[in-house]
Structure formats: structure tokens, C-alpha cells
Image (cartoon, rainbow, N blue to C red; front, side, top):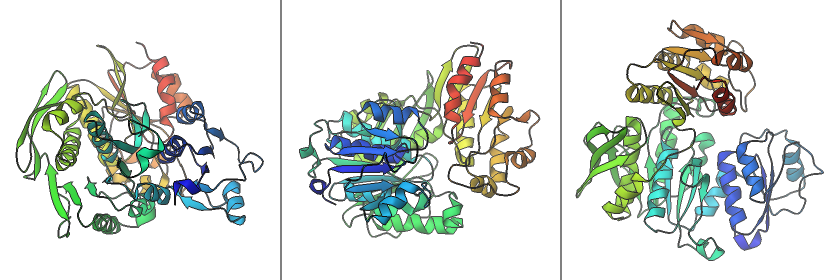
Length: 457
């Protein structure tokens, strides 16, 4: 796919975090960009402000008929009328992952994969490069607070910057095996926990697919992976990282000062001392070690790495403080897998010891709830109080017997209740809260402002 042959791109599901970053890329390339999404969000409104035409009703009268490329995601149903029209009329149609693979193909690419941590690490790597004046383009699966975007342009955003000189940083998504479209120069693998079993079937299939991704690193490339993962024996140069184990890159002397983590990182050749990050949770110390490993392999000066990390503000909806007063702290987090829930709740417990922690959780997907019900119960039992919402279905149809009531019954917690969104908003202002967490990847983010408005602050 050559840029000069494309002048108009249409996105079906343009409001998705990965799709919107690609839309922004093509817009920056001077292409005409438009799209459809079923719901209006903060992100779609931002895209419209950037000059991208979006509609929210399936309507063949509203779609462009002169596009060179139609991009869609696996979340779009095959019965979607616009997708059917473009297929029946032989337009060039490609999945998001395939297009991303084509975009980065001719560039030096850093791809960050894993069931947890990939958004934060890819954003950190991009920020380190940007701070160090290294020309980079980044596609990240979250809104980076430093840039208020999921997409980073090179310093000079004209088309000449896309001739191969810019380094591409991409979040490599395992859903639907999307990341197998990538052939990176540097790959990071953070975790291979069971997830997306509707796609993979079992945990072994997930591990095998991550191994396939690792094998796609270019011959002269580098693989960086968490020490505990069963990944070895690859022909490419490999490095491990950890905060718990002996590894090529390891965190040492971890302390908390003024609410920040301060620590050293031992590299294969030196030690970087007194790294200071404002992100909560020890999992973010580990994420930082992974990002440092990438920067070190790119031969970025240690002082620049340190200074860039001190200025890194994190990702929206990744342990994002909405309210922070002496009486009440309200944090919003994207956690939607048992491991992520455990990390978020544990981070809150570490930051605010002795405080009562109330969690509002919206399960994401019927299949995920079914497959990990016991693990969800175990993680949610770390709360002092649980307010549980109904499952957000996303792309799925209901599954008989799989609902939030089923999950609630498994949770061994004295203070737990199942609520509708309306009931939640009615009751939340009446509660005596200390630490409040909203948790989930569905549309719970739309409740953040209404909840904030109901709180006694």
C-alpha cells in the first residue's frame, strides 16, 4: 500500500482507540478521512474538531463512494450495511491491524505486546524518544496525558518525515491475532495471561501465538521480555527484564518518596540511579524497566531517559485521579482483567493504607466474565466494598447464565451489591466514601463525570 495511491480513507468503527490513531495518521498525511461509529464519545468529538467527518447512523447515503481504502475492526459485525456495500462494490477493504502493518512496514519499528502493560510501555517509549529529540511516530492504545492524544507525530509533520527516517512505536494488540501483521525491529512482550478465550480457546494457544509474534522480529532485531515468561531459544538477540527476578534489566532499591517511586535500574553494562516516576503501583515500576530496556538498546543517554520519565504523566483511565482531597480520593482505571483489577486495587491500598476502598466494577464481555469468574471474584475480594454493574457486552450476544448476579454470588465480600447505572448515581452521593475506584473497559468512563458531580466534595 503506497501513500501516493491513496487520497481518501473511510473507517468503520473510527471511534476505537486503535482506529482513531490510524485515522489521525492518514489525516496528518494529507488524506481525506471520514468514518462511522455507533456512539458519539469524547474521542469522536475530538476527531471531528480535527476535521474528520463522522456520522453515527448506518446510512449508505452518508458514506463516501470515492474512497481508495476502507478500514474496519473485528468488532464491526459482518452484517453492517456499510461494510456490505463496500464489499459488494469491490472497494479495497482491510482490517485495522493489516493497515497498521502496512504503515510501519518500511520503518524501524518498536512493537510492545502483552496482555497487560503494553499501553503504558509503548507510551513511555514514545515519550522518551520524543523528549530525546529522536524523530518518532507513535500509535498507542490510550490517550497519553502529555500529548492529549493516542497518536504522536514527528516534530515536522510533513510527508517527507514518513520516508523511513521516523521510528515507529506501536502497541501490538493480541486480540484477533492482530499483532501477527507486524515485523518489528524491537519487540517487547510483557505478559501472556489467559484472555480473549473467545478467540484463542485456551491459554496454550495464547502462548503459542505470542511465540509466533516473537519469531517475527527482524533477523537483526531485538526481543525484550519479562523474565518469568517461557520465551527463549529464539535466534534474535534477547534481553529480559524484571523487578522480582535476576534479569538483564532489573529494578533495585525501590522506595516511595512523596508519593513517587524512586529506584535504580541495573542494565547489562551499567546502573541508572534514582529514577523517579509518578505512576502508582509496582507494576508500573516493572513497565518502566521495560521502557528503559528499549531506550538503552537504542543507545539513548541515561540522563535523558531519567529526565523524560520524570515528565511522563501517564495514560488517561490508567489509575487516573479524578478527585484528590484529604477526605476523598476518586480514581478511574481501565482494569478489565483479574490481573489488572488486582494491580489497581493493590496500588490504591499501597498509596492509601488504612483507608476504606470502594470499587465500582463493570465487567467487560460475557465470555471474559464466564472464563474468569473465579479469578474476578478473588481480585474483587481485595476491596472493602463492591458496587457491581451489569456486564458490558461490546461485540457479544448474551450467554445464558452468565451475568453480574452470577459473579456477585461468587465474591466473598460482606459489603457488595448489584446496581443499575441509575441506582448507582442515586446512591453514590449518600455514601461515606474514602477511596473510590471506577473499574472497567466498557462505557463506565461515561459515568465518571456524573459520579464526580454526585460526590460530597
